[in-house]
Length: 80
Ligand SMILES: [Ca+2]
Image (cartoon, rainbow, N blue to C red; front, side, top):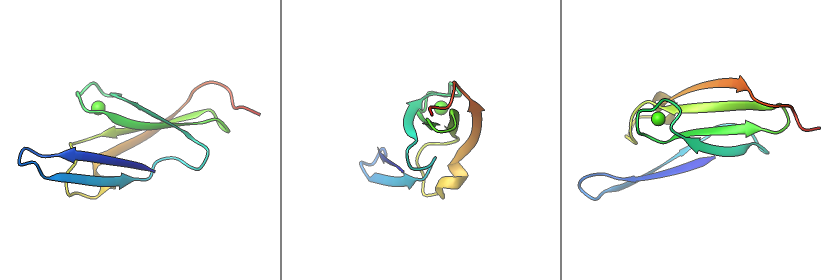
């Protein structure tokens, strides 16, 4: 579970919780699509799958699912 916090130009802070991945996954953040906005990700040690959640817009009142585009890629070997 990621909890994101942003403050708008008027100084109003907003937090949004986003579920991505499963228990035991390792959180990763970066700018996967080069748009200047941080994106979320998780890597699963059990399956060696990297799940990217690319941010489609800054924090808004829109539901979290509408602001993320999720894809997966095999990365490395599963840890036994
Ligand atoms: Ca981005």
